[in-house]
Length: 111
Image (cartoon, rainbow, N blue to C red; front, top):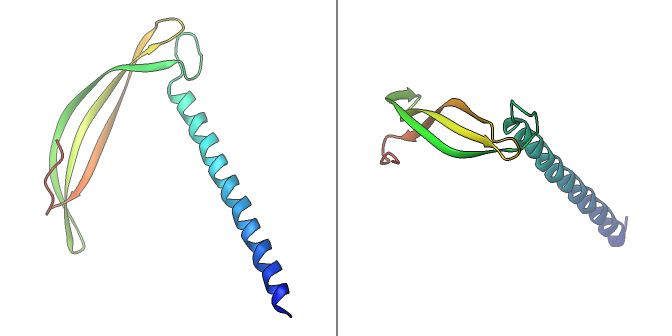
């Protein structure tokens, strides 16, 4: 094989990696849009992506400490309630979930 054969092989390899990367990014973006539309779907009129958050309530659930191997982490848990309103029919609803944030013990907790 000559040097030009290696250049062609490298060029084809770079092009294949670039195409794979573009498909990966576009696929991830389309998946994000699909999940976002389903999460913001109005339960009254059924339109996807029509709900927007107008208020958020956060209730702290407490702080716990967990030791994993040699590392000790602080786990701060909170209950989050998002209040949605539909852009089209003005229906309101709420969605509640629990959020946990893990921090190494050496760092200050984020408030």
